[in-house]
Every structure is written in structure tokens, then in C-alpha cells.
Length: 380
Image 1 (spheres, rainbow, N blue to C red):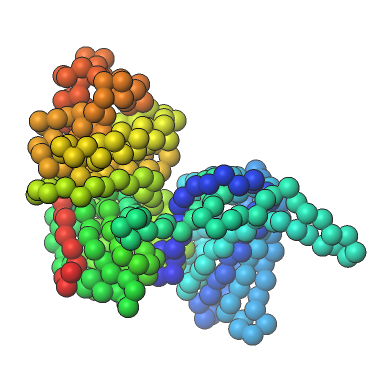
Image 2: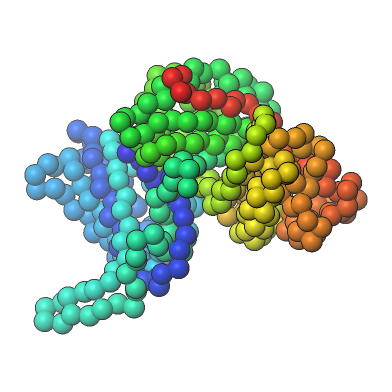
């Protein structure tokens, strides 16, 4: 499952953008070469019509005829990322499903070029360690506690929520040890309506941990059982279908704050009704408020992680008190001013305005996700 790296590479930075070179390496099934070439012939002209596309090439290995390479150039990363995460992309690549055994996608900014005796530098600035292109995937890194946090989110068909919860809570935890440097720490799964959010915490290599989990028979059995209830079809045995699923399901952790406090905590998750286009602003607001809340030695907030993809914002918290006793802190807006800002960034009904006490209680009930599982691995 090398494709899982596609699902976990999400972070941001501020270097200068430039033209993008995409390298897609594929292993084609024995005997599927003609079907693969036919699928590419259809795909190449569709991709060339995508805004921002410059060119592409199809190459075959001279050492192994089943290994292929598709390289493409784009005006910048933004149009490529907008396309590769879109439903239209998933439709375009469907003819390749079943042809490919494995695939790996790499993305590079064009910095320097040489044509004969003419050498040129592009306008793009090289990345420094720790930097990432705005909006371009990057490897999730451990926090100060050495833990990597990531989430996957997907939806089930309306009416199938109960069956999905039953299936997702009924598997045996995989072994915690992945290898000498990586361990699974905790998996917390919540639902709100037909949306599922699975938060994972890993010490070490997140991609290696997700691959390890995906190979476990008990996990694969659950994933297969839940497939008929998903709103969007997937085939985790097909590399391209799996990559598409993990790309659209990725819900990266964008902020995490924690403090050492004594007492027994309870874990909660909140799915915020974000106004269109306000996801980034809401995530920043919650992060700023959580930083202050965890630093309060007498406050109930021990840990808070904000996960975000566009306008999908989920906050995972560990609290020392019942959320109903302090809805503002539970929601991540302890201050009156912050609560008022939340009222502008979230879809709040007029009859329950925020920051009124009634509005906060109502919003807490609307945001609260139902816990399905919260467990460590078998030997943790």
C-alpha cells in the first residue's frame, strides 16, 4: 500500500511558487499493457484540456516492460492540486483501474533549465528544510511530544449510519509495533450524521504505520464489509482507486496544543458547521484559543488537535470536565470576543445566536460527534 503516502502529505509554507513537474511511476499488470495504453490514449487528451496543464509524456522502462512512467508539466502546483483532488480526476482515471498493480506520484518545482548552451533560472525559490509550498502536500511531522497526528474522513450512505458504526467498532486492534522505530499509539473514531472521522496517533513513520494497519486481516475484513455502505465507491485492492480514496479522505492535523495536567480525561470530537470559504480562518481561531486554554493550569482543556481540509474542520479534545459544564471552552472559544467570531465563521441559526449562552449550548450539541471507538493497539 505505497499509495497511502498520497493521503498523508498535507501541510503548508510560504516559498515562491513555480512550474510543477509531476512524475507518476506505475507497475502494469502482466497482460494488461494494451488495456493500459488504450486507457492512456483516452486520458491524455482529457488531461491536456485541464487549465494549467502544459505537457506530458508516457515512457516505458527499457529494463522491465511492465514498468511505466508518466511525466507532466503544469503552470504551477495550484491547478494540478485542484484537478487531482476533484471528482473529474477520479472519473478520468477510472479506465486505468484494474490495469495497474502499484503507483507512486512525485511532485517537483522546476528551478533551473538547460537547453543546449542556454541555461536559465526560473522564478521559483528553492525550499529550505521545514518549508512547504502553500497548498502542496508535505510529510506530516511529529509534534514536540514525538507523535504524528492525522485523520481520515469519509461518508456513508444516509440510513447506513448504524450498520457502519457497528462494523467500525467490531474489529480487533492491530499490533502496536510496526518496526523498530514506529508504533501505533491510539485510534479514535467518531461519527456525526453520515460522516466518519478516524483520528490516528503514531510514534515514528505515519506512512509505515498506515501501511501496516492496511495489511492486517482484521482491518481489511472490516474495510471490505463497509464498502457497500460508502457514498463513494472504492477498491482498496486497486492502486489507483485506493490512492483516490486516501487523497479525498485525508484530513490533516493543522494545529495541536497540549499541557501536563492531572486528572482523568475524556475524549470528544467536534465537527464545525463552517460557512463557505471560512475553514482556514476558523482553524486559526481555534488554534489560537486552544493555545491559551491548555496553558491555563486550572482549565479543563488538556489536549486539542485541529484537523482541516478546506471547509471541513474537526477538533479533537481531551477534557477534564463535562463539556456541557463549559460549552465555550469545549468548543474552543472561551473568550466572549472569540465566541462572537465563531458565530460569524460558523453556520449558526438565527434563533440560537452565538455568543449567547443558549447559542453556545445549541452549537455544542450540533457540533458534538458520537464516539465509535477509542483504543490503543493490542500490545500498547
